[in-house]
Image (tube, rainbow, N blue to C red; front, side):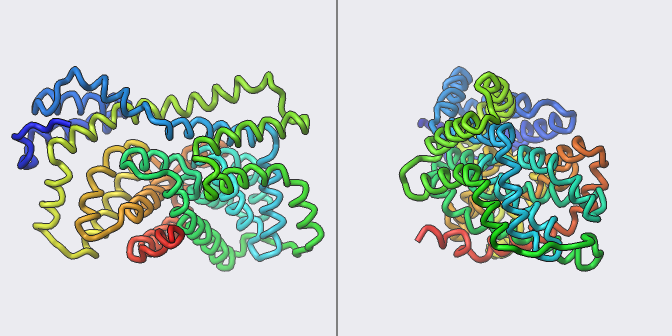
Length: 435
């Protein structure tokens, strides 16, 4: 790609800062994200002349012409089919049979159920809606306050983008040119750590407040019977993980096989009819209709920022302030958490990842480690206002106010933040599975 000589040593000036500030103003006035990003890219191109504006259409098409992106609607469709066929209930039954014997067993099994659903759908909002419809009423019946029950499900559903297969890792892999399969393997341990931290936090809160009035008893025969009843439901994540980790399938191929398998199981069991398939496709299309336009316009913006040397300017500015790796990691963490609070994950990834990766590499951080660190930090934003997508999903389901749910989610935010710090400073947690 041709880069004008004027930008080879360019410093960050108002020709770049001005449009970026204008973009933030558009966000503040609730202008659709894809519109704000697209306008910003056009303005920067017009002011700087970094690239001919006529090339932006080609850039949009080239950015979306990626095989990995096909996995996004397929994983969302798999999650939708899982709910429609009733297999999601069987997964939650397995979670309940596995964890129901421990104190706070209902809450713990709910989080585990969120993790099971995350292994299939790759979406936080989908997991929050699917698990929330089934479990929140049960949690309240067990003695959990309504707002806390909502916060527990919203927090557990954060595993949707943290446990593979994850839409977020598909996007960041595409943006940075990293293998999605590699990211899925690296994200396994961090995703499970987040899930365990939420379980542990719930157990502590239950111990302090005595929410659950009773606990069950683990009976091996009942557990085996539940697992056998859910054998077809467990087959779906088995296909996804087994296929990807063994190298038999790419993530996109694994998602396609999961869709076909879920439909076949539903038809075989009589819980799904082929005439229902168009409505499932419609639901998947609506999700992609939100994500794909953002990717389409954000990729040219990221390209423009790279050409105008914004990442290099950021690295230079930060290094002029401090070269302490600990402070730089904490600075990146603060940026990711703040960004996650005010903007959706997709634009955050497409815009921030290319800018922040050079800064991370300047302190010796591996690119895989950086991706895990960034996505996990952004995941906290799903339960923090003012955006807090999971908070709004659960609020819509239950009628509880967003602020009351957010207040009860504070212990879970702290627990997740602790895991993010461990991931930031112990790279082996992210790189161990890669060998």
